[in-house]
Length: 212
Image (cartoon, rainbow, N blue to C red; front, side, top):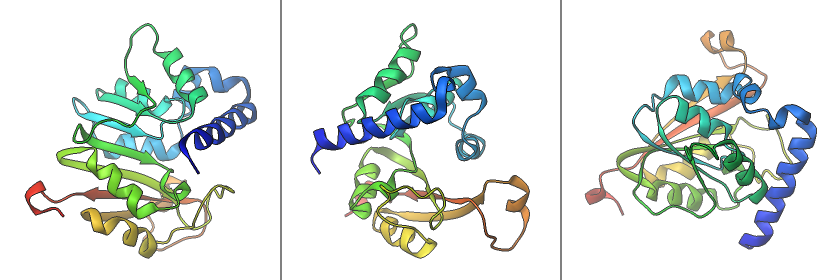
């Protein structure tokens, strides 16, 4: 699917999501107060103060704004024009964080966050490789994806387990994968459980001299 068609499709998905959420979709402070539970996990686990951070697939930028408020030099990227327009409307007075719809140049970011995007991409291995090129030396790719068929969407190209996710990521560096459940106390139990869960994955590319 070419880029203009893909942009229109994700625009349509964003508009449907806004209709489903209702009036609260346009209330930034409400959205920040009700940030998705997996985004809250990322904010707790990954300090971003004074770091250059890209929120890849940022939709309308709520997580990007949360990262900015946490002290990051944050940039949000998405290809859905309506979503990026909404994100920019929230920051019109400050110009921060920055929202873009063109892929940034390589080597700019200390952390690239990619939240629930990889499962939508036909070539997940190539996609992960592209994201790692956006990292500065010593940078890290951090992403989330549903475990199995949690949060299933008709646009998902695959359901991941730890083995298939690792296979997509390992060509690009050292990989770490953790499973997190929606209910915090369940993460303290040393057994695998049923229910809504995500994988949080990290990819740390090797030094440039050793890559390729």
